[in-house]
Length: 225
Image (tube, helix red, strand yellow):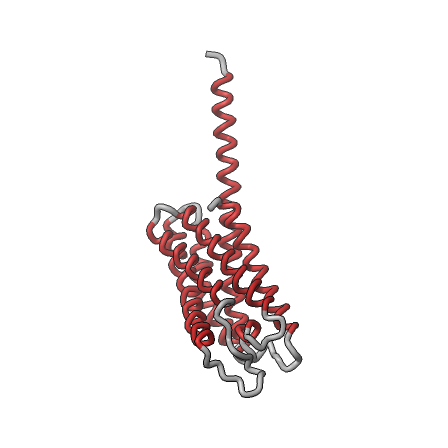
């Protein structure tokens, strides 16, 4: 996966996820609250316009995050920790994709809502896996970034991503559970955007170095013997 394409994919993931939960929330009836109700409700069988969250916020976003992970794998290879961190990021993207496949039966605002189907149970398991991978990816990659001079500037921000997420959850929990979940998830995608920008930057540096190298070779061939 070329670094430039992977970086663009990561930036698009930041956009698609946030647009999906905002637009998906606006599509719900007035009884739905972004402060109190879960993001997963937006893709439930009973949700209004569930494709916004399922296909854009989950399926598309998951693919974009996985592609970013492949770009990070290539950029940090052959470092073992870097490959492990990139693999976790790829797995996070895959898990996010399935968030739009395994749907809840109903929203919290629905009368007598009881998510008991197999796909509702699968959704809850998958959501837990996605959450765990979202915490692991920045932590593992932080130590990989520290070992790589080209990426070292990103290791402290990556290391601070998890405590920042926990603080955001605690602060916004005073508003509601839905607000806390959204705040924490937005922080994860801000980190993803930072990694994406660094990947794009590395692609630019590599292109400039290649052009300089080609120019030096051309000059050496054209110089008199």
